[in-house]
Amino acid sequence: MWVFLQLARAIMFSYLPCVLTAIAVSLVTCHAQCKCPGISGLLGRDGLKGQPLLWGLLSLLGEQGKWPQGLPYSPDTELYNMLVNLKYRLSRLEGVLALTGKIREVGEKILASNGKEVDFASALESCEKAGGTLAAPRNEEENKAILGIVKQYNRYAYLGIKGGETSGQFMYIDGTPLNYTKWHPYEPNGKGTEKCVEMYADGSWNDKKCNLYRLTICEF
Ligand code: MAN
Ligand code: CA
Image (cartoon, rainbow, N blue to C red):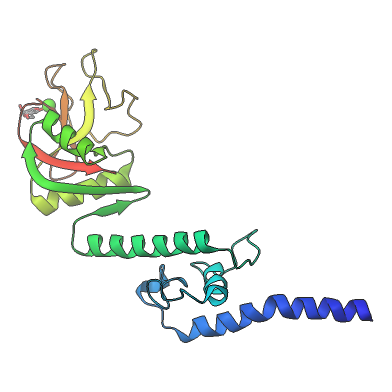
């Protein structure tokens, strides 16, 4: 009997905060499909400072309102709280950038253009300077996302693909072979004289000389 009581007490103790927190959470309206407000955003930035217990409990609920696996409650959750908060702030930033047409997200990739038309080498250089590389579609979904930017600026773009030594052979910038292609009918036709690849306004590809002025689209 005593054991049973202790057990019941333990369960009460460990679950009561969850229940209370769940009630508190449900009182707060979620916006943007509840994508990421999580708990960290409830009281705003640093809003829970000085209330480590509540902060910890709220944060432990995580983004989807679930207890993160394998994370026992501990008042020492500062680092975890910071990560949850950072994630939330990042997702809001991404929302702003996507809304204003500055970026497109496709899978894990972020695509962006500086709107500039330059030769292949300069385009690649500006992407790398920004910490990315020239966008290269690895599947239909990514091709469509890049096409979205081509249409947005109404300009053909250089892709992060280059011709190899063997004529007609193309690869990614890092030298790995292409795992997806979207050649326009009868392309590539440069027979080794067109070592870069441009995307047309319908999303198809054409091998093209590298010294022309094409839209810069980077991936990150
Ligand atoms: C031009 C160039 C070529 C392309 C043909 C298609 O000559 O853009 O790269 O293959 O047009 O007609
Ligand atoms: Ca061509």
